Length: 110
Length: 115
Image 1: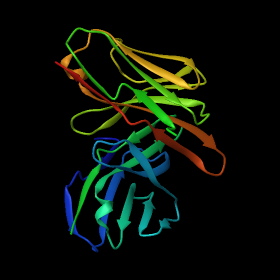
Image 2: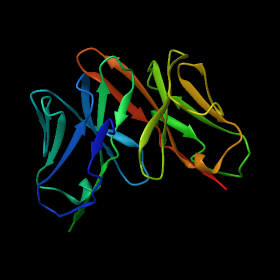
Image 3: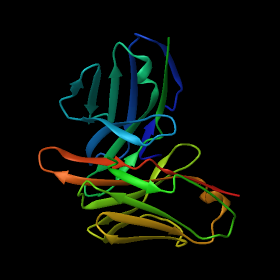
Image 4: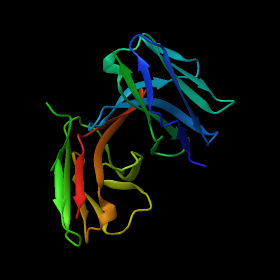
């Protein structure tokens, strides 16, 4: 089983729709959680950290469920510019490295 | 102002050659990384240095040798290149900040194609 698993997609949704991604992780001792965004042929960039109580940043909402070992990302009122690959990232307790999921590819259609 | 820069951006070379990729960060971070992103888009860590000291060395062939002359630079040398080395190599840097956690900043990537 992969340490961090995501549905690779692709997800194709119309502009203005709400879309949600899930990500599962295998190590229950995981410490920190993030969503990164990677545009085509570009480097990954931090979108948001994911906190235990859930957190929101504008149209983006991240949730963490430690009992079920998954994190989610919800994008409301999607824009064309949201088209990208979204990477689920986990830092395991005691480890100094980040573990990246395969990424979920999202395309917003006009 | 580029925070994390890599050179070259593109590298096309023949099997068996030796090549180097350079990385520099001007963020003042203590920790730098090399990642490999293969054709399936998995991003996997290869090495990490903290203040010029190697702290992470994943299962990477010893043809790959990182070098950190100072904490702002982390270079990657690859000997005897193989077809399977074709990938995008990303450099990154990070700094732990109390209360904020740690964010990794990535360079633009080096696209390596081995023929």
